[in-house]
Image (cartoon, rainbow, N blue to C red; front, side, top):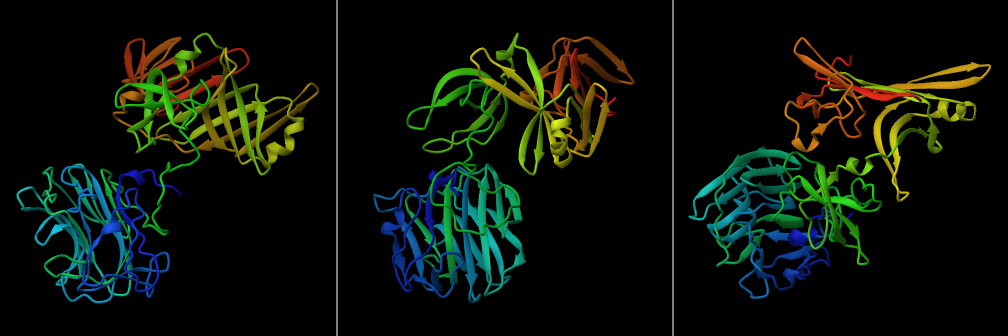
Length: 478
């Protein structure tokens, strides 16, 4: 699987190759280790590996250094931005303060990951621009010999974190710039210039500039780091817009831009629209800021919509026409969804086999482009068949998990409802009946005739002659 932050990698060493080889390949985007410098005899060893059948073997007197004083190598720049230092380590002996990775030379460094001999604990230490230690994190767990560990030191804004096998061991905050080692230009792996060297093995070493890859506990990597660029989800962009393949790309404001893929596979700007929400984005040569799910509803003014149901069955997803549906979506109790399938005789087997059903709202634009948006979904928990002289219907129903309440939802989710039929207030809570909004959900903020409402529940009512929703602040679902 490709890495969305691959182009932010400063160095990536898989440490693979023939036993006792001193040829280390940098699989990152710049390949800077082609002219790495050495101290001692750091060699590739096949006796131990986390991945790939080999690793960097160190005897305590060895250091593999990325020498940025060479004009063709740019120094690691982690003085002010985010960064992630990570690798796998296996110790053979703990008899000194073993250096795992350090940016700098000797005691003049910006960031250092090391193992303290007196405690057998992992340490993450950083110095400010004056050389004073401002971050000194220590693991709660002790390290043992003969065990592979994943280690990560991360800066996320002003927050520093130390991880061991995906567990956050310690954290602290400081907004200071770190020590500028550009005049020294060494990233030292496995040791430093004052002789505190690692006795053991390092594998899959990755240094990422400008990205805090881990901001909370995570599952430690169980496969080699990816060495090619690509989105985290190669399935494509989030939520294509109503104009077809284009999807909404957003900046940090409330107005986004719609982009289409050109002949070279990259995006080209062609329009603007309001933004609703954010999700991860990707692009070339590095990930842009965000992707926004845009508010497409202004494009639907005057366009009639309908509702359809999709059944999930062992044979796949089956689209089913419905005559009516209703649902209660809420924040502090399970949601309930029900719909009626008319003339269901040809669908009896599919209905009995179905495990889930989804209600979608559907509209067809003048261009012929079809837009669909999920309104409610639930597992199939009850089927009621009604058979008479002139009808054979089935009512499908089920419960799903509650929505998440939010006392202060992001303004990007705010909705102004239309077609208000009535409003009321009781015991300090308000409710309203209005047209069904495509995007409003429990946990969002709604504006009803100029008044603000924090939505705790939404009731939908749709049949062949009418469609509306009730919304309210109380989560009783009433």
